[in-house]
View 1 (cartoon, rainbow, N blue to C red):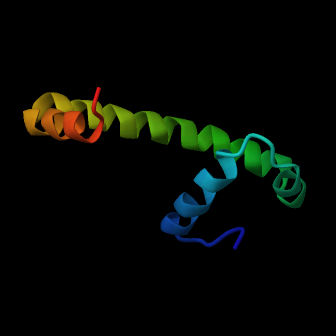
View 2 (view 1 turned 180 degrees about the horizontal axis):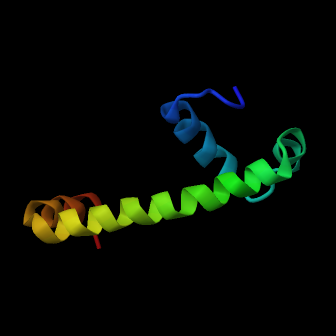
View 3 (view 1 turned 60 degrees about the vertical axis):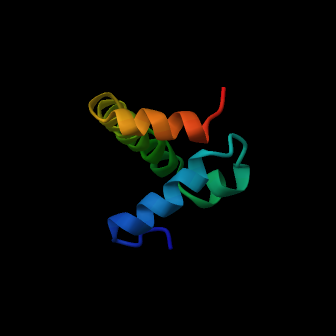
Length: 73
């Protein structure tokens, strides 16, 4: 499970590993360089995803309407 080989498998496992701030068991079982590399690698991908969402929202007013419904102020 550490190296699934498929990008989908790594994408599903990495977020769960990064979200909890205190995970001594996982950091000890995994190599410290690997966990740090995974966090560094995930940051630009998250930034790209948020950027893409912003562009879609700007280009499509429907996205803004849906977002306002999902997130009531």
